Length: 546
Image 1 (spheres, rainbow, N blue to C red):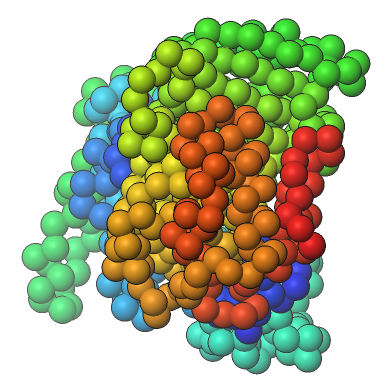
Image 2: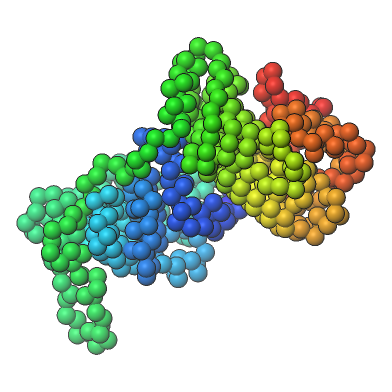
């Protein structure tokens, strides 16, 4: 985690959190539990920015080649193999000493597997994690790498003394600290880094000349240029067999050993291409527009390309709220509304799969069932898992339950749903969540900011949270009552939810059943004034009473 004393105002602003409050970094990526999840993430990123090249970093270990083959098939552009020698100075000693294997082993296996499966030409192969000299670069190229990452060596070049105090905010030379007095001691200049890499490049050129080659690309994958050196001392060194690493990826030397594709993209035509064409006038600033589409579960990441275009043209400010208003009917695929930004509104009559509103930074998403639905919305799932993952702003109103890991790392969005699965609001640092139904276990774990209101009809919600992590109290403050009621009213108006209607009609009965969940730290608690600012959307969004 990043300790609170290192979370300065500048860092808190960049990371959408609160100054002085520790930021917990979960070991796993909670939106990636399979190679299919990774493929979806890569697809999402490429939809949001069609010019981007996506890199996936893998730890060097036995079997990494198989994973790398899956990553190439998932349409990544760059695969990075990281060795065990790398790592930030803030990493635990156990991780630095015991995680991963040498990059040489992981790189060789990856090169061999990609060539064997006719995937090598699709991707760029990169390595890092302990590279320090020109010899490392040349060896990495021979084993299959085309790009080479330097971290520790470059930092040492600008004055790092390897004090291993990065996490304590006490770096004696001012490299890794937010303390102004210590930062004043920083001795580094850009020219130091330039000089370091210039010398590395000159040394690489000298070694290439000795080998008889003009370009680094000419030796990529050429394991025939190296051999195991006999070593007598210590005696056990002779038992080391490097033949698996030095084996040629293609014994026939006919397959590509280096990437030849310009991009590794999926060949499909997303629905957003049509939306972009239809919304051209609105994107050009010629007034708002309403668009209507049928949607199926094969339509993935709908809205991301439009959001990316808005961001490219207008930056973080986006467009006026509601400039592009899209109405959909049917079953949406993965990542509906991912990276939604200010100016884009998405309304879906039907249901949506996982990752709704992932990375949302503004705008509004409304999801409701059809008029003829006979089921109770708060007892049925309408959106999948990992909804609003990493959202920094915007609004979500869903007339139904959400799956697991709802609003993980939410840091500014406002969401109203009718139930959530396990791990709701995990690692949340901002925003407001209202749950009008049953919640799963482990709610609010790692929550350091933001606010949640949860309906507890079964009187068991206190068993589903860790009181050492979050605070729990009845909704009694008039400001909280007004805020909660306004959000439920907005949910009712936008989704036509019978659940919201019933709660509003019997307000005095339901209000005592709500819990207010907030972080234990006073610094992490949202004020009503800040919440009102989050809710600003001219002409549309309601405000909580001040």
